Length: 67
Image (cartoon, rainbow, N blue to C red; front, side, top):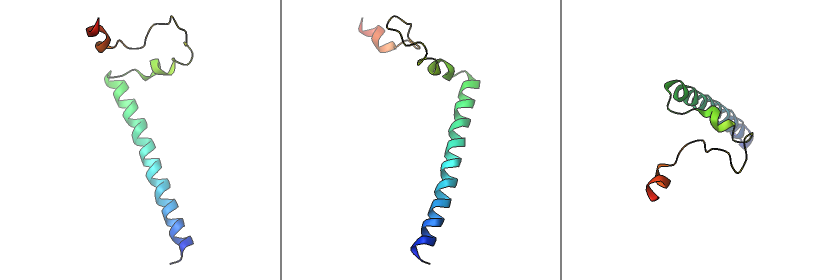
């Protein structure tokens, strides 16, 4: 087994591993949005609503306790 064959096997397995990780992450996002834990569409609108006086996405409980 030469180095090129070893590189080909490593490339193949890394590609499969990254595809599985990507689909796992997408499934995690989908499930957490369906359960109501997070609404990721709000985070996607941050780039569109980038004003100084815009309302925050989520309230920060630490900043409320400091005041």
